[in-house]
Image (cartoon, rainbow over all chains, first blue to last red):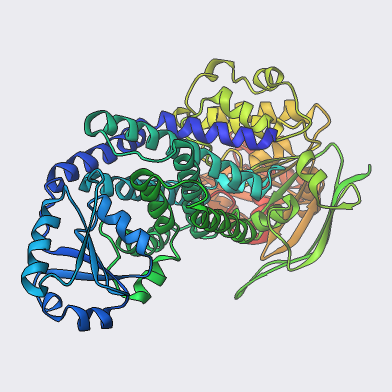
Length: 335
Length: 294
């Protein structure tokens, strides 16, 4: 424990005294959130989103004219309640059930829903029964925030810990530590906790700061949010450690880290939703811890999901952290 | 004297390079043992195997009769040739950091005094001079109050004054009954600090003993130096075997009295005669065929 605390303290001091790195870690997410919030908060979407429950084939039979209308995006759903929830929060403009007698749900406060109703009546007549739901709108920034914070955490975790370990190895500091009774797991675990504390503190500061100006939608529990993000950060740090477990080349580590970050950035839902994406893309996305972290965070913040509802993501993140950290410690080399 | 560390038939084979070729060593407790050799001789690989940092391809290393394990890590001190420290920490914080990695340690205040660090305790370790940095690195090697200390080229890059100050520090450490294993390029350093030396070349130990023993063994004669003037140049005409080395003509002889008589008989001016003692530098060149310092 004494050794672990020594490494933890030394690393924390190193980070906190490196003013330029600290300032950058604090400033970048602020800039991103504000910039993107102002850019996208208008929600200028060209396509109306319609969820479909009961199968797309059946939809084609029931409402062929509606389906052939341009600028409408139809997204198949297996879960009726999930679709209705999306309409409630303005995340979807309309939800259609064709499994039995055709009916649709719209949010009575949504302008898009109002227009879509007119389109449905104009193309398919009155065959659909109307179901109205109500709920507060989730602004684009509310949907976007978990993604942007998650992405920032991903960079801070992967590059923050990965480059540090590679630098230590390259300049011989790890070799010096190897000559002491310090174990590889103690060293790595201290690095993990140090980075985790710093990432969580910075994320909390950024969240609180942005919330002061933007007033985020927060339906769920802050404790659940903390748990999900802690586990998410742990799994991302573990990936950084795994990548840095052997190499002494910053260029090589940088390349591998980029290879890891780009697919996560594109496929984990941080920038855009994967709802309409191909099944294989969705399956690949499930391999990334960022996907689970962002999806659980959105569920907590925007839908008020409880801990039990996000438990699958929690277990996956915990398992990823343990397995990846274990492999990283096993193959770790001091030199 | 009992050996604190022994190495038997050490071999280290890298792809295409046999770095260590069957080395046997036994280092008695309480001495300063010098491992010398030209670049690429295998001394850093050998010392790293002894430190437990590098594993041999074959052969064994025993510390107090036991294989190297957790106890070894607790009881040895190591100063590497190239070492970085944690950035943004002061000298005091760095000492505290390393102190917390060991179970048994010296008092930090004692280390500070021993290594003369009190003036630089609050300084960022990145802002130390070469000599200050080496003193701190030695302090870190001593922090666990080790019985056995490895110093790998500790004074490389230091100015002459800083080097001599470091030697004084090593002598002080040695006086505390510590065993020191030292590698160096500087023969003067080996002569000043080492009780026993081994010279390595091409992965093997080619000569071993106390500095005096080795010099006597390899050089049974002395060198007379006469300025390279007319008198000096006459030596060749007189049939005296002399070698021209810039400003001087050098005569190697194991019969000093007889040679001097011969020179006097031939009216050679001996006013500026010098007798040069053989040094470890000469020994090094003699056994390895290479110059010592880089």
